[in-house]
Length: 93
Image (cartoon, rainbow, N blue to C red; front, side, top):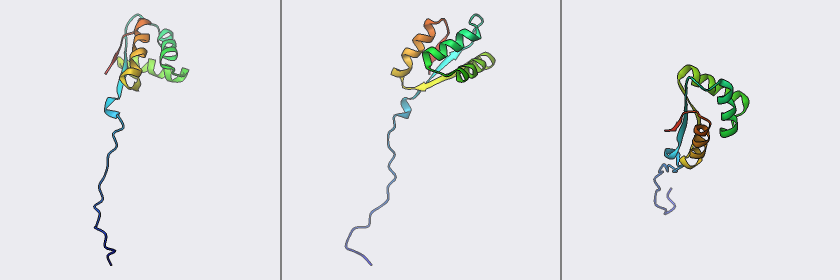
């Protein structure tokens, strides 16, 4: 039975969520910053809780680097500056 309407084709629509703009704030290991300093910096600058900051710090130590935060460039730039100002090497990728 037809109701006189045209048959409609179902089309998948992908909404642009801006995920392609998502970046990673990477912190790198070094030989001069202490675990406590890196942990306290991640808590202060990235708003990590104690457990999250400790886990990231261990990953940084054993793997050489860790993505400590994901977000947009405008969100991550001040965090990177805060980490670098604390004497820790960090980059946005």
